[in-house]
Length: 294
Image (tube, rainbow, N blue to C red; front, side, top):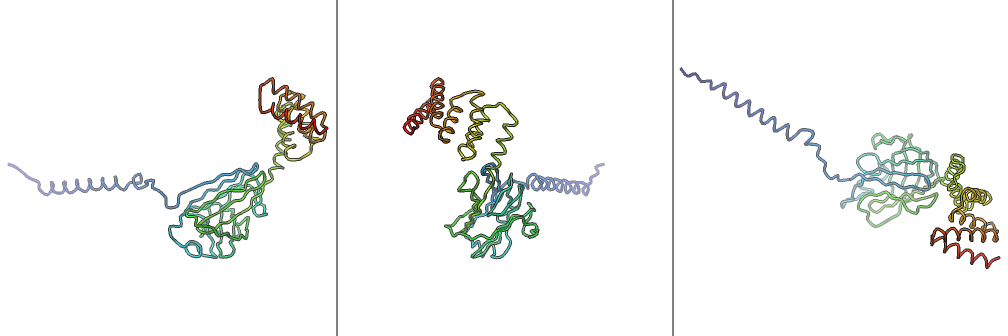
């Protein structure tokens, strides 16, 4: 006798179809599949710059103009803006610095601006992850009034550094037809002098450290008596053509022509012994020039 179970078979087929569909749904819509890496409309960017002995880094996103009216349109005048897209725009200083003549302590801050037709406000906020909704003016550590410059269209928002010197640089923001310039000053000279003193105290007897210190003081017009003492100390420990050359330059700058020429001749002999052409040439030129002025 044959017994059939049609209802059971139908239900089993239905369940199998649901299981197959469910499996396909999970396969196509699981987090691993959904979280695909795709090109961002406003890609992330960063710029780093050393000014003197201060490292400055900016992390931001770069929206494009894309044919839109940006300031007075997409970014309303008089409204706080995070000065970028996506997450907060951040700036980090490795040491204290001056922006627009105002002091900023070492640390990480978010950048906010308030665009205006004639004047912009530039702010650094201690809440480095702040956005427009969470922005609080009482957390500002810096506020500057800036006059924007008109430029040709800058399609993608950008921060960059220019006019870089030993103790200063310009931080420049550009997007659409607007340019902002924020002057930055650092105390590289004070830091360098402190580093010199610390290094010499740390490695007493290191003739290279003494020479570096003497050359820095010579090149930056500091205490030449101290530079001379360090240079002589370097040469006393070990005479090389390059540290004897430094000694000759310091002596010449102090007006001690006889000593300077003698040191230059000694540096020349050492350079010839090492067959180092650049210092041979420099010493020969100095000896010739200084001999004329005796």
